[in-house]
Image 1 (cartoon, protein in one colour):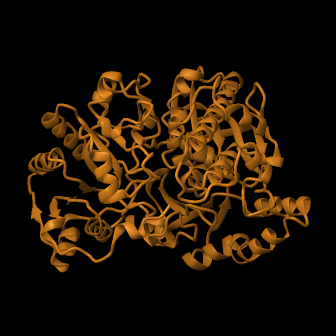
Image 2 (cartoon, helix red, strand yellow; image 1 turned 30 degrees about the vertical axis):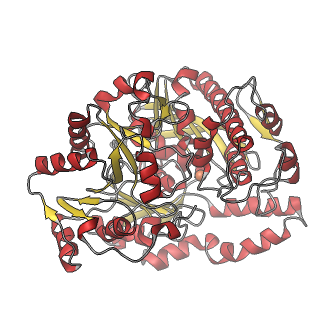
Image 3 (tube, helix red, strand yellow; image 1 turned 180 degrees about the horizontal axis):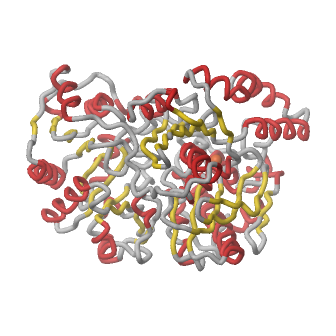
Length: 586
Ligand SMILES: [Fe+2]
């Protein structure tokens, strides 16, 4: 039995396919259309999912959709009536999309897919909850979902047992921890639903001390948090419930200045605001989680929703709550709800027992050696081929050790926002200049943003102060931990200003080639840690195909592309005329 899960029309459209309760394929639409956070109907992602199993839409038993559009529209109407006439402009501008797309989802699905079966609409936070719990290793777990907003819900908690999910309580729009984070993101001149992680990266440059932070007491005025973690925002500080903007004049006064212009320098005031936001965010999350523990008395917890991508907060959860085990959906934002909706149908509605645990994120398209060779030959690209995998690894490790930047393209593309060793740019973490080299040659990122280390799981505790045993979400780059003092200066390229690292751990069974490469690099450098950053330039989705990867290398300063068993040097091939820096966006 095939079930197709779909999320779209808000941001991060995606599709996922289950075969008899096993997740066999999943991808975001942006990877195919090359439009970051593409929200349009994920026809390319769906076609990929179907093709991966050699089936057509006639083979699909159910389509599961990630929210209830009419309920969401009800919220929009009620928001509009409450704020009329201030909300008129934004309401009218959103109507065509609602009428043409969002309220016609079954028709669109049937038409675009030539599908005649049922479309089941799953409550958005249930889809988030299912995306984490039903694929987690836990038979029973407490569940917390926190995002911007679904239909009405912005935060929910409950418990999962077997194939059943029971959400017990919720917080409703316009009160939203996710929207608070987004509003401050917008205030600091970054793009909403995209750059929240930049604010998280900026925070450690500011004052992170609750006693002395100048903005922590100010931001506490914006959100009233109770001991059980329930909260209400003071809506005077926001306008998102009736405008296409987020911060209000009152928020600007509170934060001592107007909304920051895009691309502006980040003086200490901005850094302190980012720091205060992170502190308030953690306060609320830990209070909520402690309360959820009291209510459920379950030692396992699973998280989903955009706020579950706050890896800095995630790394502190087990120390600040009684929970002993944690699992987080690697695609915790709305893309992941395509998985959740599909599993909710299979396990919770149809009542099938769970038989799948998500152990890695390699769910996207892959390309065979033959296909890649054909691409190289057709485009007259010069390459070397390594028939022996050990030799390929030795050679690549040597290249990285010689401080070259490597585009690493292997196997199935990752699911979720992080590159995890299938479409990654890899380089030498021990080189103090490497952050600068990567920024100048490839990524063109804001200077304050850290690069991430990757380490084999059996080496992680030597270098990082992880929770023990190391939680599985660390494999999805979802937990930030301190780097041990003695190693910080030895891996400067991945040590953030506060001494932390957003590490990825790899277990060999997850990705043997990647694991062996890191170990091999360790033999040369003495430290088995690489820099792992996503294979793309800033503002571009992660590369998907051999063409995307080759184009990205030729337009940037990536020195060499290691694609399947083929090694392609940029210097050996004529450079494209496009300038990646010009194309780097937010
Ligand atoms: Fe969501």
